[in-house]
Figure 1 (spheres, rainbow, N blue to C red):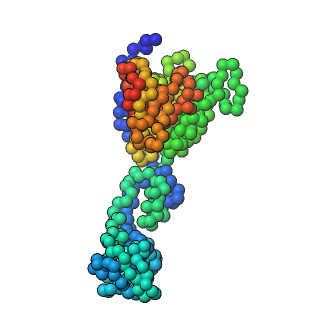
Figure 2 (cartoon, rainbow, N blue to C red):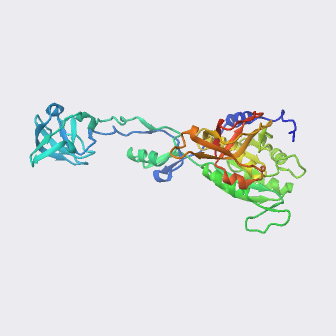
Figure 3 (cartoon, helix red, strand yellow):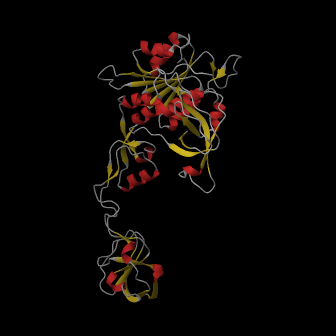
Length: 419
């Protein structure tokens, strides 16, 4: 079946340029370190002192003067010990050593550490160094990890477990972060009924809302479920007006050219500039992106609306590929997508005039990891259309075909978008 002319529609790349060019306003807050997980830093984090703050032993063993052990074996006099957390109470001189624990500061006079396994204790006051080797390599020099005042977490860094450990190390019990974008999800359509309701002959359960709420939460948003509204202009207008009080509103259904597709025209009546209305994408052609600028000095923030097709695969694809780019920036970051590679395990016919996103499964060969794209297998799923959420649920990637892509033979190496 030949597709209608699509030359007047925006390409996906053109739409991305529109989305990326729109100014966004972020919010920040000071939160306790433990509450910062998943958020991005709004200011850089610097070290408060040298790390390590002293020359530090990396092994349990003996602090030595390198000159004393260069001709090992050598017998040294034990003049004390340095446990972790204690400062040495004296220095060491020629022919002397101190037992030392991992993480303890080197005593003055020492410039190396010999691991305990390379020694033989002779008695309470002496030890034989069996192998001198390179004792300097078992010492972390003061400031070698990071000198005082160095930025260790840049502005925009996402706070994960390792980043939280860094913040704790430099004494940041509170951090300034970008807050989560506040977004809302609204479903439209006379055909929709709640999940727990038995649908009538012409009705379906509202599956888009739980899908989008969970997807947006996974993207780091604070999400409000505005329920569903019937295809009545006054009801839709009121619901849209309320939804536009959030940073971004996601509306599903009512985006096409039918008699009951009220959403785009109502958005325009509400003063929202529609920057994208239809795309050269499959699925997701009736995608809408609109902006309402701040209307007063007290409300200078822009608010965004993403009009998504009612079919769930279309709504998923447009949110993942397009809307996510604005959400990442609202959260203080930059647009992020995770592209993977693999080999096609079957041939594919040519693609049509729209960029095509087909649910697929990426499988890693045994004994390999996800970075070995040449060993991953890409299996396109038998996609039955943009309403086929059962196939979407089986997929772990989207196979992206460019416009008018030629046939692909089995074994072709290609990129896929992680879901």
